[in-house]
Image (cartoon, rainbow, N blue to C red; front, top):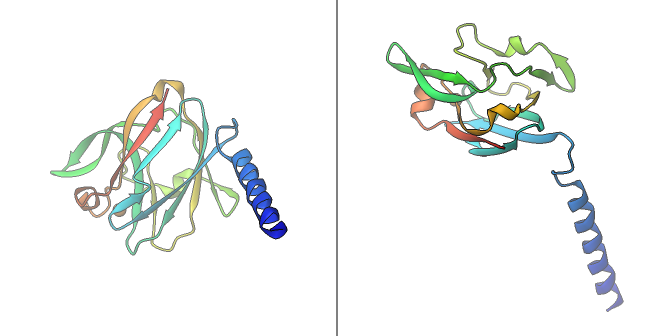
Length: 164
Ligand SMILES: [Cu+2]
């Protein structure tokens, strides 16, 4: 009986410890977003306006994947190619790989329509660090437009929701 009581107290202690570490404490919000054929995991991400976000991108698939966030898909030669409205426009974004700062431009393809991060399969994850501006509140879409837009067409889409 005494042992059971100790275990119970220990579980309660762990629970309190974890809740103290839970997001909402005002610190940066850490999110891991996995990319694979042909989806984002999680498929829906919620952030708060004004919040600092550390968004780590991992390519768990066998093909190159990218993340773009925006609204209203544009086409290039009849294929989905990005968004008319880019979520990242006007947002200063820092990037880190393996804990070291890198130039975010290294992660972008030359002809990208808006801000994007592309990762080869097995490439080391990248963390994007930025603060969500208050005027970006609302619902946005995440998308991968690799392979001439086929990833988007195959369902590589998600929701990026900015709570006011
Ligand atoms: Cu993809």
